[in-house]
Amino acid sequence: MKDKEQFELIYTIYFEKVYRYLLQLSKDSYLAEDLTSETFLRAMKNISSFRGESKLSSWLCAIGKNLYFSHLKKEENHLRPDTDFAGGIEPDKILLQKEQQSELYQMLHELPEPYREVFSLRFFGELSFREIGTLFEHSENWACVTYYRARMKIQERMKKNGL
Image (tube, rainbow, N blue to C red; front, side, top):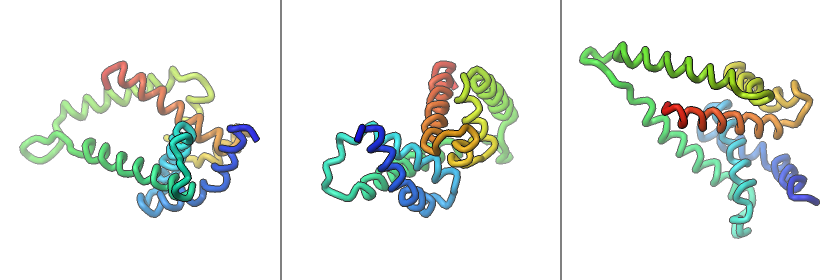
């Protein structure tokens, strides 16, 4: 069996277990799906570091847990709004957010297909990876990987543009 086939088998066997674990942690089905997909992408990149000292499912869940805690740290840093003396968000910060949204939409518009469509369906349409895969007549794994790559492309452009 080739590496790709082996990993698809691992994905098929363990996806539900890792997803349910992350859903239990996060209490958010969309976040759990995103974290699960990122878990498998990280695992695929780092499979050589798996020493077999624990169950594969435990290793995958540990990766997912670490991603979840990293997500919480990022969210904590983003949820501290700049406020004025009355406790509300400053108007110039609202304008800055709108400008950033406009730039985000521009970056999304510049993405090649199928990245643009998959990202839009997932992020704005809130479709599951299974639903997106079905729409494109591909696997759930394909949708997950395509969404992740689209997200990485947008993040690279955001860093490049200083956002």
